[in-house]
Length: 154
Image (tube, rainbow, N blue to C red; front, side, top):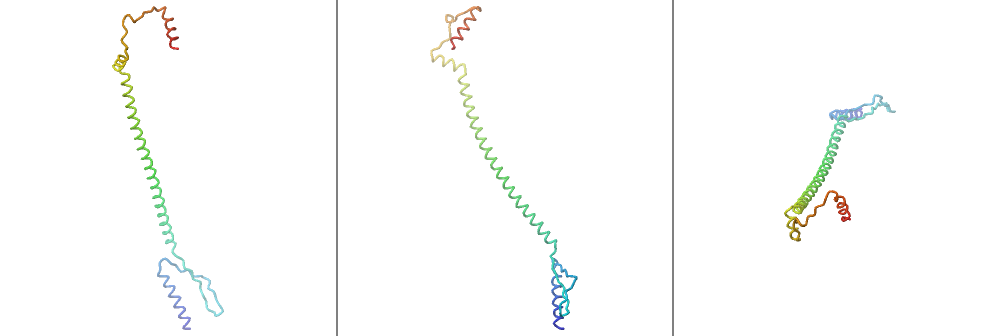
C-alpha cells in the first residue's frame, strides 16, 4: 500500500509541476484503462499553449518581412546608383556636344561674316566689278540668257 501511495504522490507532483507552467496544459483521457492487477491508469497528454506558437509564427513572419524589405531596399538603391551614373555620363556627353556645337557655330559665323569674305576675296585677287564689266540685257533676251546660264551649270 505504501508503494501505491508513493506512486500516487509522485503522479500528483508531476501534475502540479506541469500545472505551474503556464505554457503547458494537462489533458487526461476520460476512459481509464484497467490492467490485470485491478489498478486503473489514465493516459496523460501535454499540450503547449497555442498562443505561444501563434506569437512565434507572427514574430517569424515579421522578421521575414523585414528581411525581404531590406533586400528590396538594397535592390532599389542599386538601381538608383545605376541611374545616377547614367545621368552623369549623359551630362558629360551633353557638355562635350555643346562645346563642339559652340566651336562649329563660331567657325560658321566667321566664315559667313561679310568682312571675312571681302578679305579672302582681296587675298585671291578679286575686285568689285566696275561699270565696264557689267552687261545689260533686255527682257526679251532674258529667256535665252537663262537657258545659256543653265547650260553652263551642267
